[in-house]
Length: 253
Figure 1 (cartoon, rainbow, N blue to C red):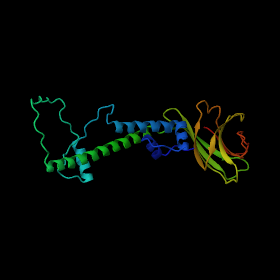
Figure 2: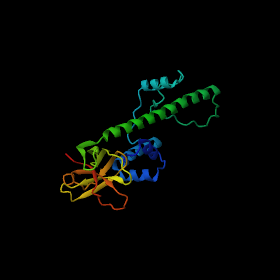
Figure 3: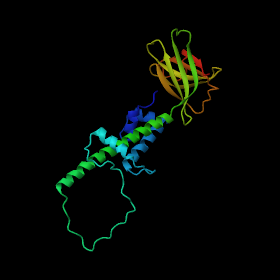
Figure 4: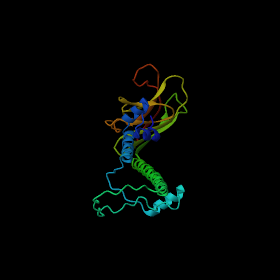
């Protein structure tokens, strides 16, 4: 089992629908659900236009660089995000309303020429902010490796090998990240297990699809009690019990 594709999570954050399989994985995976929640906050912020924290006006040099990269006309205002003084006195309303005055055509064209670049720049700023937040969240969510496991072949499976590591995410959720090189076998499937040191207790972590996978370790499982990582060959008989045909095995160190 692997984590959800970042592009798919971004589409979900913007309101798109996912396949039943993807939706089920996100609901069951704390790391993917946390990342989707963060991306939804960014999307909601972009839609609302009213961030909880006050936004700082960019330096005029930022707008100059954006204008240069996008090829805007030289007469575009250099700092369109600068706000007029909010506390300026409001002039009293005249006793009689003046007749409406039509804006000259050249002024209307100039206004449209100014508004379009501002909208483009504002959109670009939001996209850059969203990407920056996503990268920061991914960096903060880098897991910690708690243990490494070398998987050795068992009798009857010469040439098989593998390795695994136990990772812990920021929320304390643990994953077993496993890679195995196993000779091809017709029929059946491979299953990943945690086994107690006295070989009397087994916990299934899931089916190994291909040569590698990431498996969630249940919160109630103490690796001191279940230190053995095992990959087995299982028949398609509907029996959830370990077949006894282990391919590779190793202990958490």
